[in-house]
Length: 78
Image 1 (spheres, rainbow, N blue to C red):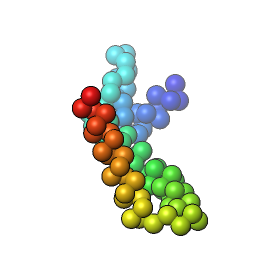
Image 2 (cartoon, rainbow, N blue to C red):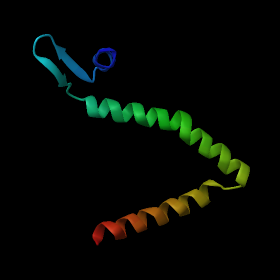
Image 3 (cartoon, rainbow, N blue to C red):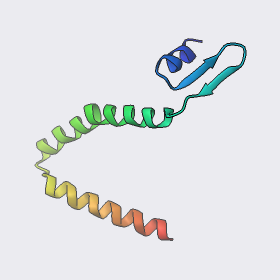
Image 4 (tube, rainbow, N blue to C red):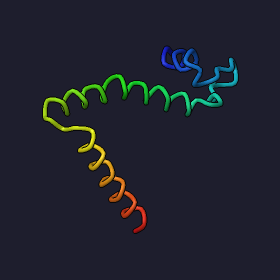
């Protein structure tokens, strides 16, 4: 039951006593925003530190990202 209480306190579900649990309006956007924030604070910080150690600059990263987007676009067209 604690998990449902946590989801309710985070505003992700509505708890209706005697009726059940319902997904709250806007919960998907709030969840995505929380995941973005966690990614930026954790994974992205670690990635930038590793890039610095390896001498990878933002231009290299931009090129790699552009190549990824081209491959992704090509795969989606097939």
